[in-house]
Amino acid sequence: MKSEGLKLPYSLENRLVIGIASSALFDLTASDKVFRDHGEDEYRRYQEENLENPLEPGVAFPFIRRLLSLNDLSGDDGPLVEVIILSRNDPDTGLRVMKSVEHHGLPITRAVFMQGKSPYKFMPVLHMSLFMSANPTDVKEAMARNLPAGQVLPSIYTEDGSDLDLRIAFDFDGVLADDASERVMQTEGLDGFHAHETANAVTPHSPGPLRDFLKQVNKIQRREEARRAADSGYRIRLHVAIVTARNAPSHHRALASLKAWGVTVNDAFFLGGIDKGAVLSVLKPHIFFDDQQGHLVSTSQVAPSVHVPFGVVNTQSLLDA
Image 1 (cartoon, rainbow, N blue to C red):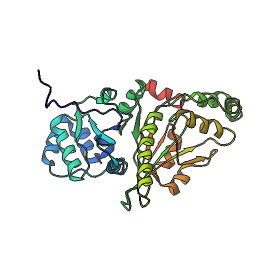
Image 2 (cartoon, rainbow, N blue to C red):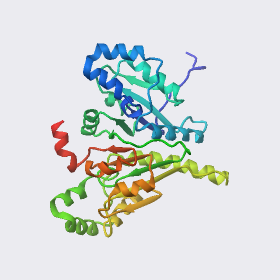
Image 3 (spheres, helix red, strand yellow):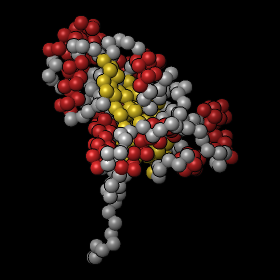
Image 4 (cartoon, rainbow, N blue to C red):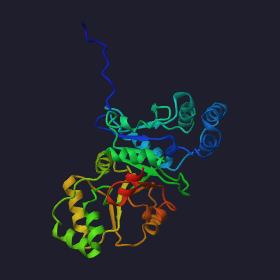
């Protein structure tokens, strides 16, 4: 058999692939109310009647739009970033989502629609390093299966659209790192935590759920650095920060862990209990990931915020789900 003309399957390997639910990408307040108040049949009619009325941007929309804009750095090997819709809608009711994607000019062409079921189980075969949804149950179930996921929280943040910079901020423990040190904090208090981190300052943490996501982000940053090396007029757009409640002396182990993992950040804020929301109001990230709901109360007022339900501080909520 001749092999001429055979086309190899499109590979998602070596790309930053994000799965996003329509509930995180768009504002589904009206749609959800119809479903809750009147049931599935009326919801179906509502979506069909409003098929030509685009959904408004949701909390994660600015992050996704800016992330996809970095595909102008792509080479002959295809786009650096792929975003795939993962939805509980069936294909018919999901049509409005895809029409809204097209209306807003988002270069998203791939989707998985599964009527009434969460499609997060397809994350590994689609090489996803992150799944984002406003549905807490879907996110907790994904995390319980060791799949990196985050719940996008309601926010009053509004996109100013003034530039295409992308600022991503992470908490450290329970997000980039595992929760081993947080467990010490819970059992031995702050003094015990600092003593433990000082004694283990040169021992890297085990990676947390979003370490690999940061690795993929770093790949794009290296592509930006190469572009700037070739074009001195190019302006770096992608910036990464960690914003953590750690402070000296426990900062040393966090930085040592980043180095051991082969990942980098542009900025680091070691706040030692200072309100993260106050800092984020100045930093203005387009997305912030934290494992503790208490921190996210203030941050969600000033920045799109994502709860990563990982580790000891979320154990009880996972058991209750």
